[in-house]
Length: 293
Image (cartoon, rainbow, N blue to C red):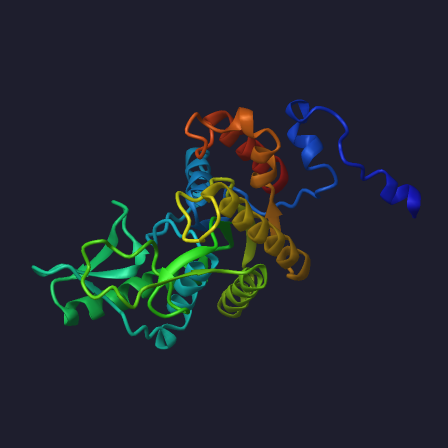
């Protein structure tokens, strides 16, 4: 027994010379995605990168219209709103920008703004229903969902209804908007509830979780730099993801975070936040090796 586990040693060599195979040693390859597998993603920009690669390589992809979703509680909001729409009842349901411009604060549009729903409240309600129905259609028919976790901080007027981003600066009556920062336990519970809902409505669904290495832009945490806050967020997301994968059947882990953070000086662009194309390619080749057929 000791001999068996003694072989799982930490690679004792320079970080910048480690190969993806050494980083993922002992991680079993699981044939999750074939050319016929219907796959989609939800989460931060890394979720979009995976879909772009799958599309470019002729896999069977559904590109969702819920935009980038950075926070595990936002992810649950979309999943729960889609699969249990009758429970979606935020007090601050819409943002009214005036001149017939009603938007939802919970979904990000393609142009990175709150998703526009209509010219009046009645119209916005109707389009909200259709929006969540379209989300339900995706989540109930796909074979694989890739979830990429990005951040733990969020803004809201009610704790259970996080906005997709910080409150819009031009809004009036923003005195009730608050910032929260999820704990590791809260991240884990959000993931477990999301997975439970997904599998209740799509019993054969398989889930692949990753943690984005891209740090936050700014933090609401006092007495902390954004750099420290970003590392705290990633540690909570990373720990929670691995605990959930260990617990949940048909739920797997993609080590995007480890592949990038192994050599951050090499893998990040000069802005210190975004990842070089070479690192993304390394991640996707590892994804191909571990999880495609």
